[in-house]
Length: 155
Image (cartoon, rainbow, N blue to C red; front, side, top):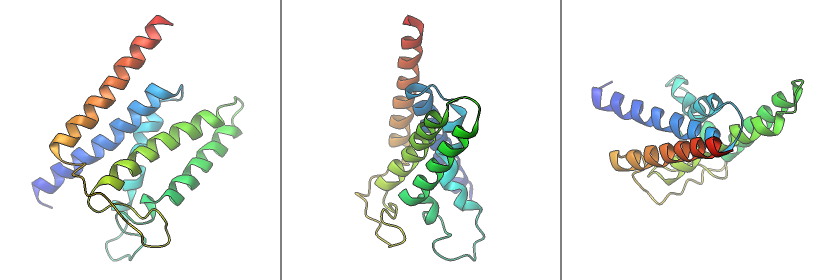
């Protein structure tokens, strides 16, 4: 893989993880590491073997609202199994992180399949993984973290 592609993917992965982290840290009281992991989870499809067919391709099944709903329900169920009432917290955190990934990718030129298993991708075709958009996403995420830190200090 050429260096340009590696740098592009590294930037996209870091952005998805950081946006998920910031949303979970700033909007919930769940462990923000949930945002790091689940903000990147849809891109686990890069690990699928190249000879697999749709829907096991990049932007296939792991980039669908149905997948997100199943994972959020699983996170909620796992959270409820613990001795403390954290199911809703975990479900919300997982939903924010996964939702941020799908929202970002749904705006890109390739889009996502909103009505999976039907192939229905539509997108406005925005360059959401461009350097400018990446700076905007990171700036908004940092602003959320700073805002959250200031809110915590005054409480």
